[in-house]
Length: 207
View (tube, rainbow, N blue to C red):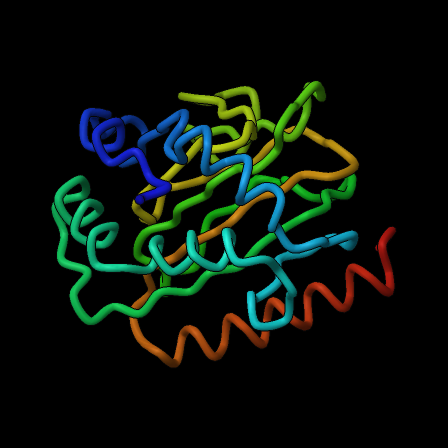
């Protein structure tokens, strides 16, 4: 049985201001959230980690397999009006947020679509809510704000204006990130970058 609520995803309209994005609460079905949360990798350090560096249980593994599968790819192709055939995927996971995380940024040009799926069973902090920004100059000028609650999806098409960020938060903040990227060379470079970035944050957390 699928962990993904395709009906809800398909029924959610694509927003176009300030760039192509959509937010889907309960993208993961409630029963599946419980199982995936149980099997989520234990990450106590800041940074994004490629999955091959992590240990996790079978429900999480099954969900990732579905997330990288053809039904999800076809759903995103239809939603964003673009072909992803032959485009490789890259998946990373986060488990912990530090004070300096969340600064305004845009994803690299090598990424085509970014998908963020939150896995926090509760969220009480004011910070840590990702904002779809209208510019790169202010976190207060935003089109939408996403609480990182379990099962919620935010996806956007990367372009020159796809800025995003969040207010400061510290502590556990679980998020799965899926990207469709241009080619396999991007996957190799990004994995090296994530490993180095995670190492720097673990060694110099206040840097």
